[in-house]
Length: 454
Ligand SMILES: [Zn+2]
Image (cartoon, rainbow, N blue to C red; front, top):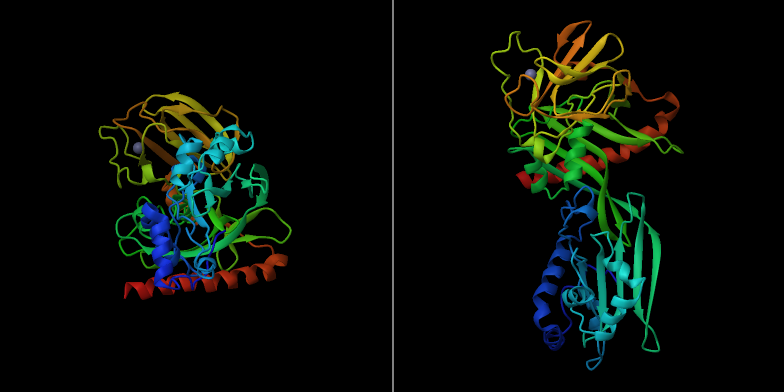
């Protein structure tokens, strides 16, 4: 049903196009829009997709619709033959059989009745939003076939619901499962104001922006270190159901040039292993013993003030880093360790202290909530509490201290200097293969960006 032939633009004859326009009536405008989008998207290295959210199913999604017409098939039909129309849309939260079919350009009382009564077909309108749906109709707008696809969860499968008119004029429905396939997309951009502004301009989903910030989080603090003119290139997966983009997946490789210095990472899974990690192209692990930031990068926190001024009037000099963020923003431990204090302290309010290896410790203060107990083991990235304004604080923020043998240190400096683990020697050959393939794609992404900038 999804037709991606590049040669479908010119209609065979004017009489045919007139017939189509007549038959389509008021829908022709929407259909032409769909065709336009399709043509823009036909390049193999399409730059970005419709902005799918991290969990596309949770949010209203503006989709690139499937092509509305299969023009080559249409063109080959004899003059007096009926033809088939395709329309795609997304099921909305408050949709009924009638409202959905109306949007799909279907005018068919028996189809509508079947969608309302059949228990399989009714799953179209069940809890999970974000279902894509394509209707196939004849030129009298009667439904012949309807296919819906959605993601039941985060696994690599999708559900396919098919409703079809039977030979006897009745209806059949069935629910199938299919495996999502991954395809790689390239994108690149330049920082003018913020990372999100740049990824929006490149039509990249938020989840890709967040992954960029997380991958390089031991080297770049994306709240404080970005410079105008910084640029990035990225290769990421898009998970597709029957060739239709359902949601963005993992970043496969990325480059971020910050203040003239290039940072790079490539995703590598050892053959036969389900667990992968990011590495530099030299095979050094990109994962460090400490994260640069106790707050996950997000659209909300990134725009929450570039710099936060220390609370004035404190008795001691300010010995930590303050991260402005709304109350309730999750706080994570920047390294593995054991909770050595969790409770209230004058000035700090609700505070957590974590003991790490090698006489290192971190402290998280002014929390609105504490989610760990003293003596508890925690792993890097675990959420331990939430940002607040308790203790001597004039507004919601997180105060972070990092101590090495009792001496205060700059957390970002420590993160940058913390050790990285090299790739195991026996994996080197397969790593080099993956890295070489990603190198080509990243360079291609960067080259297109440079060409468009000139
Ligand atoms: Zn502070």
